Length: 220
Image: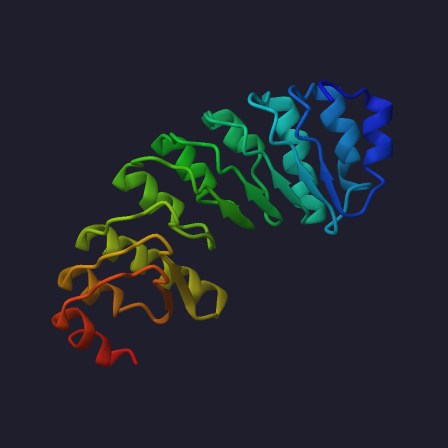
């Protein structure tokens, strides 16, 4: 499916479940508006998958952002590689799930906008994001640094600080997941041990004796 008209989009929007349209290559503004219909058709039971779309206009993004905000549904667009600041702003929502795992580059301004996203945010494909971009993204409670494979003490300190602030704000234990981290230094481990909540390091392959027994006893 290379395209879809507005009437077909309205009918598809009645479906409550996963609406997967990977063959859709473009998302014209009227079609995006028809899909979401201001959040009245698609619901929180709906996942809209548009992995074939590789460019997204700000108007269409705004329609999708309004739907996320009103319905709390899930939007996946893994075909997007670049995310301009204006598009990030248009996709802004207070709830829902936004998956953009095809985005490889993210400037600090766009990261600052996404750091304010109120739902679950996935950006697993980021390649060598800046320290400041990661620090800004960490302000989003629903984002976890899955792209991080190496931790410096400074970055660890920033992650722990931002996640601790979110936990305190929401009255819940902080959560920090680093699923692709395979090694951790003693210095970074000391910072991780300060996290007032839950820490997940599911792919950690090795740790020195100092890491294993040194900093953790205070937080167990």
